[in-house]
Image 1 (spheres, helix red, strand yellow):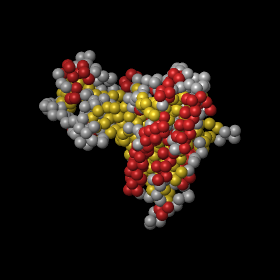
Image 2 (tube, helix red, strand yellow):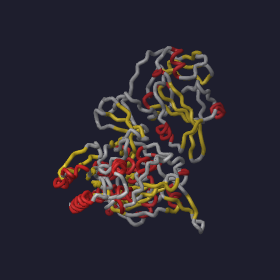
Image 3 (cartoon, helix red, strand yellow):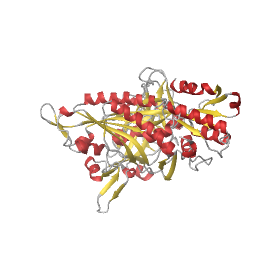
Image 4 (cartoon, one colour):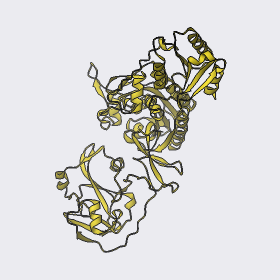
Length: 568
């Protein structure tokens, strides 16, 4: 391809809302163009990158035995009503009526659609397992679309769904997809981590995320560098911390104007780890709301996603002062004892069997000391705490650290959540009808375009990996009006094309050399061949985009040199 014939509208202007490098460079480089809030068109260079990513994803999915299908971008709302997710997906799911008054949605995901496809068409265990996938457009009506392709409303996604006769076979496919995804991200040339994750709105009993490591990532990942353990902060676990405090008799003590954990600990001369922290929230459920109190150790912080999952609520919001008073709680002095029955109480699992604790007395200016949780009946314990840097890895005993990542893939063990709700069954070996056991597997294809640049860029522009670059080589003719330079450029271009090396020839007559180099650095092709002043001495230059190092090469050796760099 020749630069003069290709639509590459590069610009120096920075998008006003662009804070991430990928957003800045993809727009400035003419890879994508914004047409609305969170909606982007892919221009020629961007489409080449997108197609390369799609091809790698498709190849690995096909080799894993999955079958490609395509679901409608528009889905009847009735399918979502069958599963019950019409009530839980919230305003991110865009709903609309057609001219006949029918209710539809723009698909944010396709669990219901795939169950509908398989239901009554697969009827026997003999036809299982089955894995169907698509690479198709999705739409989620994000309240705050931002960061370009990283958090858009419309996006391209690979979503796959597997059907099984039992849990054991689901785990086999889940593990196969983990291995398949590792191949995909490795072939894309990315540094990534597989992390334990929360299943979120998709649901299911277990899930893993695939994170592209980048300092600009939205997600905090807890990692252990002594082993392979990694988890999203929402699902991270640590080795239990054991405390041994001297026991004493439980009693109520006055703690005037001590509302915070630090104030109470200082006043009573105890470590914050000996105190109970009460976090009061209002939980929203399908059929109403309720006040809930989460208790964690005073030295820990509540992880809200864990808290939400612990009570299976739709949402947690702040409870106001009137709501807190109405259920008999005293803000700042809330404790584990003497609570009314119409509120929910959940305690962090690390506190089970703990004693000698300090907590509020549910009375203004008073706390209880030496509280023994083993003497309180019917307590509910769940994992609630946010793992901190420096905590101990429960797998190997190493030290846990934080890093940042971009979620680019997610796999789930769904179980029978959707098949049971939609009455999708098969006959087992004994002729008994059972709901399908399902798995779900997603890759953010268009998001990967941005993730690659977040991990690979400098202050000049993009640095594409070899597997995703729109072109491998940019031949820059310093002065296209110079016949000799133009001819050498054309000759090298033809030779590289004959070797099936993706090459673009910058033959723009009216563009200065500095402008051409600026575009090369912005667009991020792996190599440039510069044909300029050194040609008189029989040399051209190779520029490595990643390092910007230049090497002089004889004209007659340039094709072989480039071939070896690319194939090596």
